[in-house]
Length: 184
Image 1 (tube, rainbow, N blue to C red):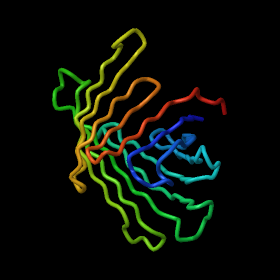
Image 2: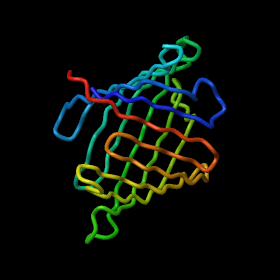
Image 3: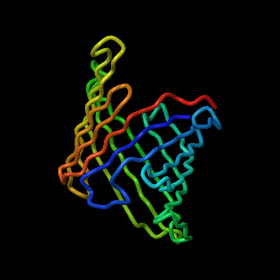
Image 4: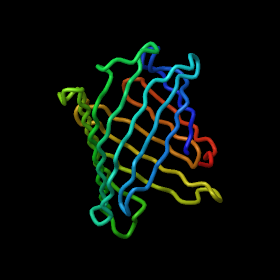
């Protein structure tokens, strides 16, 4: 099981800002498919913020993946049927420079729908990603410059082996600290 501490700020909403504890388990179900279960709790209240289940399919020849799932969102420690949502997400990697496979472009899309399958949130992004292997011995770094197409919002990501920092042009930010994997 993968666990991480996640800290978010700049959003102005107490339910989203602050420290959260996140856990994720990936269960292989076929050669190119897995079932991903994940959830998180707010560290200051101990209350769950969401639980999710996602079926992910990988298409290696296309450098793409597709996910379909269900999420339950908790607000003020309460769960209601209205807090269920459906998720559809897709990613496609493009290597524009075959001589340098560590520099690429990612296309991402996500659609969230309510319990009646009415779309509630759409996101689409394009990213320029650069992976630097062994920046220091045993330390890999990935830099991403992205642009959210529907929200017209540039963002930046810096990822190291054990942590990730994201910054958005609207002042929001988040950081993730990966903890040791917990044996299943």
